[in-house]
Length: 324
Image 1 (tube, rainbow, N blue to C red):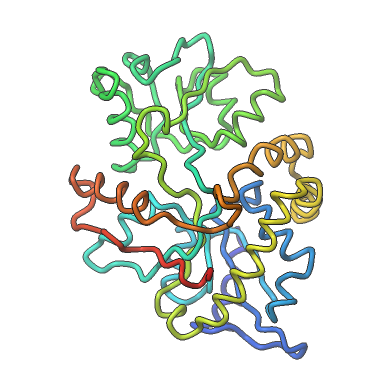
Image 2: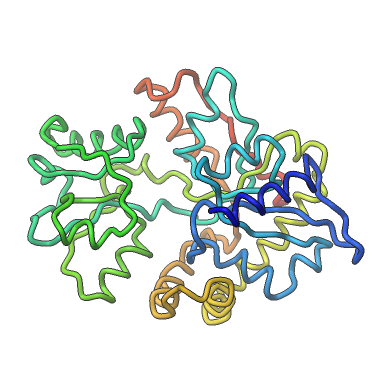
């Protein structure tokens, strides 16, 4: 964390709202991840390793986030780009003083998250959560999604025991009965469970309601930066798009780039995850990054109708014109 803080201070001194132009003529910018490097980020590291950023006249520093996440840094102009999620963007966009953030591309075309539990807990539907425990990070939107899924199946949300817990090792938490179920991403923790021979059950959110097929994760920038540096945004996204297109076409190349970026990652986990994720990086037309207006608005309308955000966010928080 000290190294990250020092790096962020250096970035802040260098960048401000615009990037630095280096002696080699490349404009230096920063992208803040949402977490440690994983297969969601593969296209970014492919773009870096294959020289796609340099082709676009950019030098991109990819860093891990501080405790507050990427959104605040991007909104303040201390990093030019970041990784976020449509659900976590909602409170920031609807606040009394909204953060200046906008999604400019979707990394994956579908919500690939759900809940995982030990199979002996007999949680095979959301209604089976009655009488069980769930590890929550305390987000009203997160808890309302769980409630919605339970009530869609006629279950009583009040019979779910919410445990305040920031689980970092999912399988350890489930194995020690710390909690009965945890929210995870299918093509990471579920694959990890398979590799380790962990006997589990998994339920995805999309199966409960198509409305929950919102965009996660997304690439964000600030509206102010995009307005003043539209050409940089376009060049950056062109390079990232090339990275994800190559990832979808050749997962071996992507795995090599990701493992080079973080040697602590498990090579089998990375390979198996990418082999499945490659089907979700591009849309049905073979394009990367697109955000469907109706899907975006549908999820935010549901949040507003259920009083989870204080104002309507219709047509708010995304701009895909830089992809064109």
